[in-house]
Image (cartoon, rainbow, N blue to C red; front, top):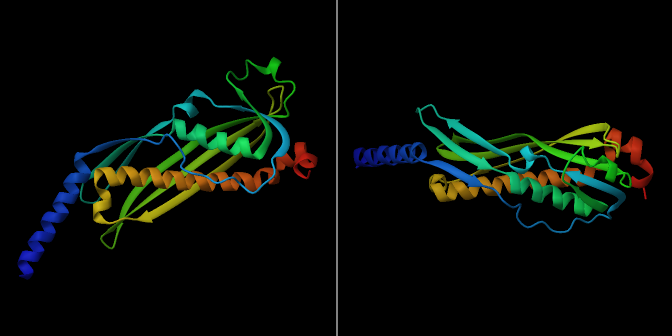
Length: 217
């Protein structure tokens, strides 16, 4: 009986490895999930938000190598979620927000704003590892936010990151469940970015220098 159980266990492991190696996932994270309204008053700052093409169309190839010689590859697209995240942040943090389509070409039309905000995604990492025969998945995401004055001069940069992880069962590595896991972990990491942005925007030295009075209103 012990020998039979061992053979079954080996076949399960081989099946698991084959499944991981056989599939290349294409994952499109196109939203951020449900966020409740933050309990803050919008700041009396008029902000222009610019999303560059790389930010709008961001995609990354994630490869996870294992000691068994298995490589799992996922192509993850985050462009729409990036926009949804910073649309949510800017619309709740600032009283007035305008969308900038072409920066810096639109500077002549931006004299009546206080600040230009340009978010960029500087790193995204999805990883899987096995701990005590139970896979753990993790997402780390990092944004770099550039701040400009209305005349296009850069006045500061802020790097902000979010992280999330979870343990999942063997079945969680199946294609559909793994697909869902990547999305959920990405949503949680982005939620952490949003929370930090709301909490620490006015604490940034460059923001304090230019908007200390408005931050205190």
